[in-house]
Length: 187
Image 1 (cartoon, one colour):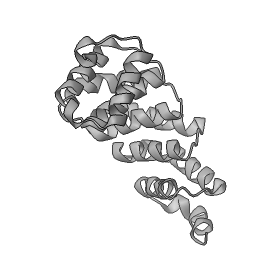
Image 2 (cartoon, rainbow, N blue to C red):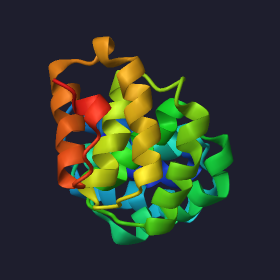
Image 3 (cartoon, rainbow, N blue to C red):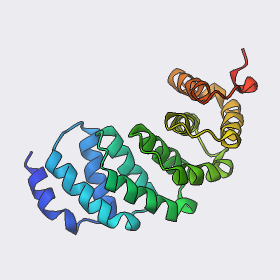
Image 4 (cartoon, rainbow, N blue to C red):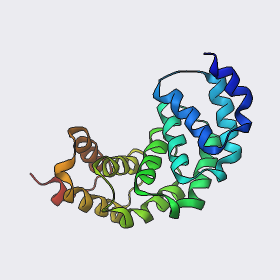
């Protein structure tokens, strides 16, 4: 890959959204370049506080897709997310929660902050967002019944929009957390 060595040598010149775009592109194309990944993670870790919420979510998604569990990067992104949680939109919030859960990075403070935003976005979440955020809480075993109730109510309101995988993922999450939500699970 002719681009990778050039990028690797010029990463420090990139803006945070460009770092995120770089890692996202490699993830989307399912390409592996460990040296580029490590250099990108190092730069992103150093500039995490400069990332916009959308770019934090995108960087976390790319790391999850590439199965990069760089602990210092995840800690830096989570710290940045905590300082910007009020600026996350519904999609970025769900995506960030899904991505860090997919990597099995458990930061209770982040999940509490995410949970605090769920009621405000309950009508903005689409079915994928609802499924992803519900799955994320269960995947890292964060049992917050109040958050799950809001997610359940929002899911019921949009249940006809859920794809089969979203239904299965949501059911799994409630089962994993041992939360019996009869209105959601009604047969």
